[in-house]
Length: 155
Ligand SMILES: [Zn+2]
Ligand SMILES: [Zn+2]
Image (cartoon, rainbow, N blue to C red; front, top):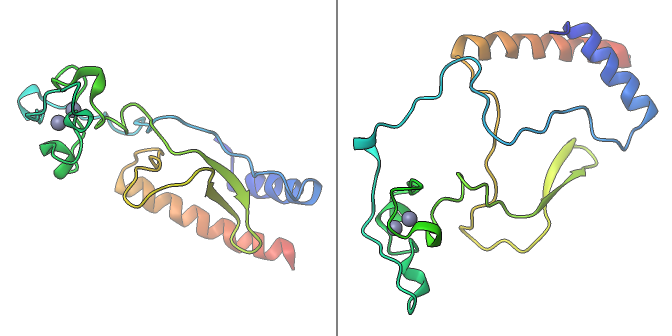
């Protein structure tokens, strides 16, 4: 891994060359469980709802009346009786709203909706590395040190 100093220097030189380019980041599609193993759900713990898809009633497939929806639990593929019609697997199927990266004037980079999003609609999963509490503490110390150095380099 890179030292904090080289990272800061790269960041600063990047800002001088291309002020409108997004800072270096790695786009990830799923959470990264390199620090600890992803806990596998036991079959007996899988929540199976009572929904059954009815062609005449599109909302029958895991909509507002679904037990899992009302408890904020996603249906598990292969276990939901609505099959492909199940609308309650948005995290697992990455059914995100359209968004794009924007550079704000004072707050760095942000995410902007690229379509109308209604209240309560699922937008996106915030993915990242799943790390231990100890590692989180170590990194926040590193970021603090970097912040101090950035300040110095701008003086
Ligand atoms: Zn359901
Ligand atoms: Zn379902």
